[in-house]
Amino acid sequence: MSNTHKLYAITHSLYSGRARSYLIKQQIPFQELSTGHESFKAEVLPKGKLATIPTLVTPEGEVIRDGAAIIEHFEAANGRPNRPTGPRQQVISALFDVIGTDGLLRPAMHYRWNFPEDNLEFVRYHFLHSQRDMPEREEKTEAMMNRMRHAGMFFGVNDETREVVEALYLEYLEALNAHFEQYPYLLGWRPSIGDYGLLAPMYAHLGRDPHPARLMQQRATRVYRWVERMNRADQDVPEYFNAGTDFLADDEIPDTLVAVLKVLAEDFMPETLAAAAHINTWLDENQPEAGSAAVGRLAQAVGTAEFSLRGATINALAQPHRFYLLQRVQDTYAALADDEKAEVDSLLAECGMTPILTATLSRRISRADNLEVWD
Image (tube, rainbow, N blue to C red; front, side, top):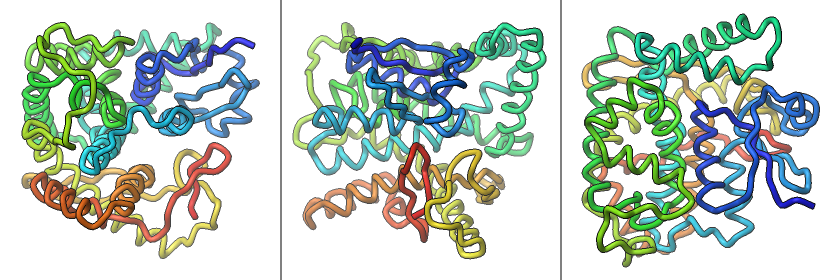
């Protein structure tokens, strides 16, 4: 039997970039296929349950849908090589995974869809070639693009909020660039789970689409190099003349990374707290059955949450998936010894991230049969 996995993904897909990078870095043999292949609909979708990407098919025929689940599959089987051993680094790595996959969707969608003069033909090419070559290919492409463009509005970018969204993104980009001047990865000399999560928006949307890619290349060259580095199987650190090989020693969190988290907290924390309050109200009113879908097309619509950001009012989708991943941060913290918790408490307070430990839903979300479901 071949040891090659099949990754159903799309080049311009935010979440696909996270799983693809992991497979590349871990040197796991894989063949990438588009969801336009007939095999996806006929063989994969019945087991994957939702037509989402990325979806992995193992050499044994097991189907694993969703990037977080794909990475967890390999991490659990291989001794968690991308998880640091120190408590502070463990929490920060898990936190960046959430921030990347859910906390940066606003700038990712904005910089893809609101600069059509630069991006449109590039994006259209990729949407077109993710469709099977059939007579209705062009029509389906336009419909899919319009659907995604409309969905992007639900993340809270409009004429009133655009300025603050762009200002915060540029501040974050500057801070992240300063960090990568010192280290090639978030926590030192090798990628962590947090690197893969953060790559999700920073590659396919912000590091490939023409307008934001040019912005990144011109204003944050070191961030752009990290994006390249995360798609290379080797360490790829020739510009660091005293490179190490491991996570930073003594559970260190560099000041440069604290500075990045401080910028991110300004947006991430108010949105997370507003979403938690909104979803908890929704849970109380709707009482979804245990085992029912909590995330994706099969789930009930939860609605939007409102919060303030630098004087602007933002309404954005309240996403249970954020809290599914945030549970991992909270569970990691809960398993620590008291003295370790104190160290994490001090770090999160310095970053402005303390509320992540108590921003919980009244119902946990677990995973069953390739779906995220309410407990």
